[in-house]
Amino acid sequence: MAGPIRYAFKASLIGPAHQFELAHDGLSFRAGGRAGVWAYADIAAVRLSFRPVSMQARRFRCDLTHAGGARLILLSTSWQTAALMAPQDRDYRVFVRALHERMAQAGSRAVLAGGLGRNAYAAGLTLLALVAIGMAGLLLRAIWTGELAGALFLLGFAALLGSQVGGFVRRNRPQTYAFDEIPDALLP
Image (cartoon, rainbow, N blue to C red; front, side):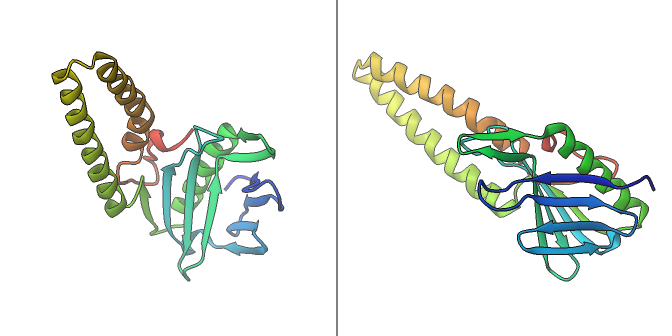
């Protein structure tokens, strides 16, 4: 194995940075008042997802679950000031890829999942379908009554909603993957 690889981010404006290191003996961490080392083979699950927020439209998340049930979260962004959340795309990508490599070398049997859980994804798709049906009904009514300004507004809103929500839905499709086939859509 190569030498230690480090990654740190601030999950909130106040509070210390969450610090992680891929050491020879395992994943070393100091996060949220907790510290420890998890052997790579003891990491039971990894879930990668795309989780944009208002201050950062390109934020990625890695959820790690230990065999004992403890959880750690890594984010691809870090709070800088009250109005700035900085992306750390390259460092996050390198760290997550290296973590997968070390886990594979240690013979890990972790469940590797990408996107949202199946139930959350299905609920989201159902909600989107209901919104689309409602907007289509409003569009037809606007056209039927001759309200062209209303129809144009609905078309513009649908285009904006599609561009904003479409990427989230596409990237967060539930999937499983192998250590050497990390989904590019779930990494910056």
